[in-house]
Amino acid sequence: MRTSNKLLASTLLATSLIGQEADSDLSPYFSYIGEAWNIADGGSQTGGRSLGLASAGFDWTPSLLGGGTLHVNFQSMHGRDPSGFAGDANALSNIAFDEGTRLFQAWYGRETSWGELKTGLLALDDDFMGSDYAGLFINAAFGPMPVESFNVGAPIWPIGGLGVWTLFELSEDSGLQIAAYDGDAGDFDSNDDGFNNRINGKDGAMLMAEYHTTTSTFGGTTTLKVGGFHNTGEAFTNYRTNASEKGLAAIYAVIDHAVSEDLGLWTRFGTSLDDDISTVTAYIEGGLVTQSPLAGRPDDLLGIGYFWTEFGDAYLGANSGVSSTESTLEITYNAPLTENIYIQPDAQWIFDAHDSNSDVFVVGIRAGIDF
Image 1 (cartoon, rainbow, N blue to C red):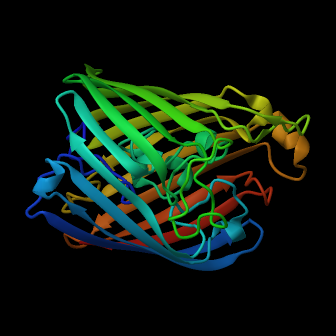
Image 2 (tube, rainbow, N blue to C red):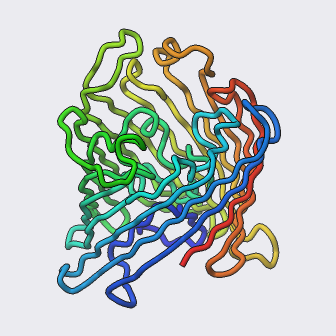
């Protein structure tokens, strides 16, 4: 929405279609992702697992909405999570979740004279904490940052939540996002179909803000994002005292640097401001994505990424037998076969997997189709 570099690798699971021109008032869409994984070494158990994700919905822009768009998305997941064998905490596949079909998002959005606005059933990882390059990778840690996804129950894929999001365009190269979401969107047990969404005072609100600016630096283009959140919920547990506490906050930064049209570098890092009630207290990642690494394959993408997750001392004191850190090196290759079909071989080396307390080597392949 804010960049046009041809290399940018956007996630298939998070779409923002405000302001896009449609050929008709109603634009249906469908995509399917299938994966096969093999835990080659380490973990709780070696062997293979497979899983899949179907996503369908529509964007409707009738005249009665005054130029706005209604976006609706349903998702259906099946298969078994390979992290059950690997014993990692961050989830080596970003489409792994409980089996079932559910409503994910349903929101109304439009452009305004000062920026953009959308409200309804949202997912905050569509808009916050994102890197244009990290979206290529399959490990879930490269999506919502673990200082958010491990510590609060706010709406992220695959469970949306009630909220309102705004983007203020401060200049041609800078902007400010501000949003408020339901503080706890629930889990598979409490919101299995996506329709059980309500405001609960104890859940509080997830308040987020993120500033971004793009400049020409080091012979390329750099985008800096600085943001943070404060969850006002009342049900956070102090791991040292077992007492219930109110409020959890974190800050983060994202740096994307386009070296050229065919090479991009990035880093993201974040830290919790409430160690005693946080599962994850610090996180950092980085890597590179290159386009057209092979002659004659101009649209292929090769990515190398690494992340490191630190779990809180108080959390570790209350949970024995788990590792204090978990890190992963991922190498992935996205190869379009046609305009609508691609394959993506992937290898991950997981160091000190949190639950299995071992180093794990995982290989897999993802195939996708979208219309």
